[in-house]
Image (tube, rainbow, N blue to C red; front, side):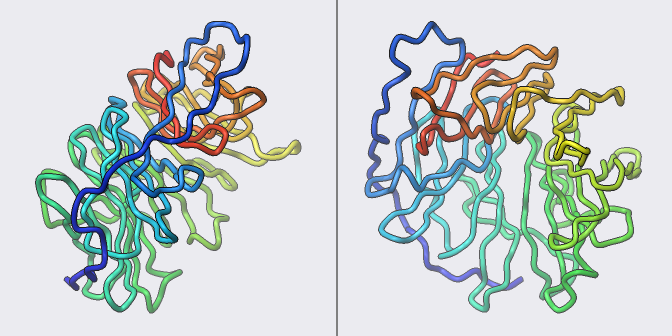
Length: 324
C-alpha cells in the first residue's frame, strides 16, 4: 500500500466556542433543544460542516476551515477535538459508537485511499482489491464494518464498485455482487448496504440494497436514489411529476412519503427522519420542532437513535437534544 503524505496537524489545538446565537424570542418550549458546537481555536464557525454521527449521539465528525486550510474535527459529547491525521487533504465522513472515524486521504501522487482513524490505533489504510486502486470509505457501523467505494483510476467508470471491509476479517474486502459500476452510500448496523447502480457521474441505474448475510442485491427501481439506511428503514428519493419526492421504505417494504422536509438526509433505527427544514419527522408522520434562530432552518446531517441530532443552524455547527 502507498504511504499517505504527512502534512496534517501533529497535536491538539486550543478550542473556542462558536458564536452564540439567540433562540427565537418569545418562542414556546421546544422538545428538541439546540446548543452550538465549539470549533478549534482560529476556526471559522461559519465554514464548519458536520458529515456524520454515531447511533448513540456521543460522536460526530466533520471539518472546519482554519486560516484557509481545512482540518477534520471529532466532537465527543459536544466537545471538539482535532484528529492527528497524516494527510493534508482528505475527509472523515462517518464515525461509530467506539469513536472510529472513516473517510479518505491522499497519497503524495494524489491517489485517494480509504482510511479509518481512532485515538487508540491512529490512521489505518483499508485494503483495496488491486495495487494502485483508489477508494473512499463512506460509512461505519457499531461493530466496525466499513462500507465504501473503490476503483481503478485508469478505468474509473467501468471499475467503480461498492465494497465492505468486514470487522471480523481485517485486511479483506468484499465486493458487491452486481454488474458495475456501483457505489456505496450507507451501511446498516447489521452490515446491510445501500448502494447506487451507476457511476458518480451517470446516476441513471437507480439504487439497491445489498443484503450481505443472504448474498443478495435487491434493486429499488430506476431513477431512485437511496442515501441512508437504519434498522432496515431505507431513506431514498424518487422522481415524480411534481419533482423529487423523499420516501422511507420500511423493513416490510411499505413506502411512506415525507411531507415536512425540504430535503431528507438522515434516518435512525426508529424510522425518524431529518434533513433540511424546521422539524424532525417521526415514523408515524408527526413532527418534533427543532429549536432555531428566528426565521432559520436546520440542515441536520446526523440523527442518532437516542434523540441527539447534529447539523447546522444559521450557518453554525449545532447539536440538538431530546429529539424523540
